[in-house]
Each structure stands twice: as structure tokens, then as C-alpha cells.
Image (spheres, helix red, strand yellow):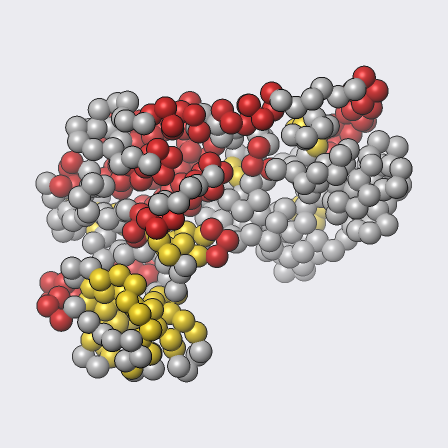
Length: 429
């Protein structure tokens, strides 16, 4: 074990974060770049060709696994006769976070990020083989990154290089006997997500329903519960073929994420008769052009996903409670996105894993990106280009209205609205 303030090359050890049977992870300070990092160092007893092969494989896979939800490796080298893997320093692990109370929306974000990471690995034909909460590191803005690909296997046709390894509790039955496959990772992810919402780790013989199923059904809609049921089947052929298929179904089923939303909507007060007339007249004029297919959870007024706040009552919109008509959602702002977009068009969130290289036509595209190197198509009221992330500087006009907000200069209609839905400023009606 290394001691605090001990020097290792340019790194000064600060404390031990985790001491495993094969390696230890330390928090260290880079004295040249002036940054805090995490160092993964195998124990002296693990400095054998067998174990070093796993650590070297983890370092070699890093360039192939470039994804926002997968831990990058900054460097891997020998320092003072020790093999050192250098990684960004997180705020803790998902295992530590799961010991505290979790909001349903936060748990859904975590589940989607885990699936996104494993789906990307499977797309690169890599089986992780050791998915568990301790191998998911939490960073700022609730970003999760999957780490520890040392046990991972490379799938080649129907064969897998090497035998199975993993952690007792999350390991699939076929992996326990040395036959890891894509479905093994699906099984581990299913157990992890079930534990995330129930607080209980399902155990052998994996009968359905597991203990504490009421907690899960209370938080998730039936579609998401069925996905978990399919993921943790004992027979691999009864599960999803890989995490890509599970991730696609999860994103579709997440819209309308649980019974709690229905309870919240059921207590919304009905609008007064004059408000109903105003809403109805507004919808006749703007429903098609603004896509106001949703309703504010406070006043029940018609709103769209592009809006930041309700134009009727001024409350900030909770986009996680809006059932989007897009095929996927942004994990940061929860607005709808298309599968061929590289970035969220509504917030400055991180990039997505593009599921297809094909660009789909859409009749809603009505403008072009101002970046001459991009010139991608834009839908009305986008704030960023979904292709190159360039901020849209030209103010959007409101169809059938010549009014503009005095603050943001975007189009408004003060005959209907009391607040600007784009910047939240009051219109002084």
C-alpha cells in the first residue's frame, strides 16, 4: 500500500479510495498539470503476466470506447516498477450514492446512462463481464461513467475470447460457468436497475416477481417493469440479445415514467371557463406551428418542449413529466431528440451516441445552421444546432405574430401569454 504524500513520478498520493484484492485505487495530485486524478495500481502480488494482461487490455480498449458514460484513461505506464493507470477523479461511486435516497427521475437518469454505456460497449463488440454499482463512477451533473474493463471479453462471431469472471451477486448463470455473452451484461444491468429502484438485489433462483416488486411498480410504468423482467430471465435466449436492444426499448418506455406523474396530474386544478376559452383559441392558431401538445403541470395551459417556462403562469417547465413525441430524450434536459442528432437542440448538454449515420428527413426542418461548415437543418425554436452544437443567434419569429420579447427578441403573442416562454420574463399584461 502507498502512503499519503508519497511521490510516484509526478503524482503525489493523497489517499486510498478503494483497496481490492488485485489492485488499489488512489486519489492523487498531478504536480505538473495541477489536477486531481485517480490512479489504479495493481498490488505487487498481481504483477504477473496473467493479471497484467487484464490491466493492459483495459488500457488498450480505452480508445475504442470513447463515450460520455465510459471512463476514459488518460495514461497507462510503468512508474517506479509499478503499472499505473491514470483516470479522471470522480465524486464517488453509484454504490455509495445508492445508500442515500434517490428521486425517481434521478434513478431513471442513472439507469439510462448505464444502458447507454453498455450499449456502446456492445456496439464495439466488447462484453464488460463485471457490471456492478462499484464500477460506475459519479461525476458532476449526475454523470455516470462505467469503468474497470479489465475483465472484459471481445466477442468474435459466436465465440468469446477467454473465460468468464465477475462479481458474485451480479453475475449471470452462464457467465459463472465460463460462457460470458452479450446477454450476461444485460442480466447484470437488469439486476442493477432493479436494485436501483427497489433497494433489493435479486438473488437465485431469480423467480419473478422478486421481493419489493411493489416499490418498483409504484415508481415505474408497466413497460419499464416488463423490460426488467425480460432482462433478468435465467435462460439467456429469453433476454434481450444485447444492451443495444434493451436501451432502445428502455428509451421508448421511459416516456411517462411512472404512476407518480399520474398522481401529480390528477390534482391539477381545472382552468376557469375564461381560461379554457383562451387555451382553446390559442390552440386553434398555434398548436400546429408550435407543437403545443403538452400541458403545464401547474395551470394545465398548452406548452411545447421547446419552451423553458409556461407562458401562462410563468412556472419553469418540468420536461421530465412531458410525454415526448420524439423517439428518444436528452438525459440532461429530458426534452425529445431524434436518433440521428449528435447533440441536444434545446440545452448545451453533452453529445449523444448516434444510433444511425443516416439523416432522416422531417417536414419540421425550416432553417439552416449559421455555421458555414455545417449548414445542418434546424427546427423552429432550437437553441443549438443538433449537428455541430453551434448556438442559434438569429431570434426565432412566432408565426402569425409580429411581436417580440423585449428581453430575448424571440417571437411572442401578448394577446394570449403573460410570460415569455423562451426567457421567462413577464410581458406586463
